[in-house]
Image (cartoon, rainbow over the protein chains, first blue to last red):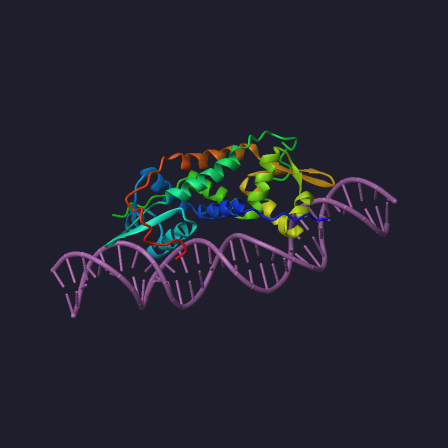
Length: 116
Length: 116
DNA sequence: AAATCATTTCGTATGTTTGCGAAATAAAGA
DNA sequence: TCTTTATTTCGCAAACATACGAAATGATTT
């Protein structure tokens, strides 16, 4: 009776990208790298963000792990920038989800408040 | 010397939306609600997803908390659908981030592999 | 009033994330 | 070679996320 669905690779991939973007510091880094259309150093970031070096390093690691950024060792620095290939993949996945033209349905009344 | 930046509300909001989307089950639910352009019941979902009722309920709660869905009590069911207003907000935030035309930079060589 | 149905909340276990400072690494300059 | 600089890894603590089954809720049907 229960036709259990198996969650597709696209869905899992999208969740993984979303997870990488689920922290304000990481959104900030991505925005900065995308906006600059350029690379930047860990040191630049630690100066402007209210977190410690090791914490920033972990956030960068997360973004690398998700594939959204990449780093090139350029002693004595490491230069980070967007991983364009995966960035486009993420873009496509989010665009696809948000492209559905959602309309207000019958359940307009928010009977269940947010946060409860 | 350290001009610490304070993370903007938009960045925090975007991270919150991303967090809500950071689990495959929740992506699946959002996709389904957006695609159907319709509402659905918790019972419909529990039949097709490989998770228990209480776990599903928590995922729905997360999505409600983030504001991406809303539920209308329609005894004996609860009908869920996309919260259009916030959906559009999320869409706009993601579009803005991804709209930056990123190009390959000098750090094309992935010296740091993903996952390490 | 009792049984049923859909869903949520509670309690609990386990695992993951976030943060820090200290130590490690790795390259460059004195 | 010793020191400095940039970054990461380690070890730890606190907080949060995910999952489950059992109990609670709240409305409907018998």
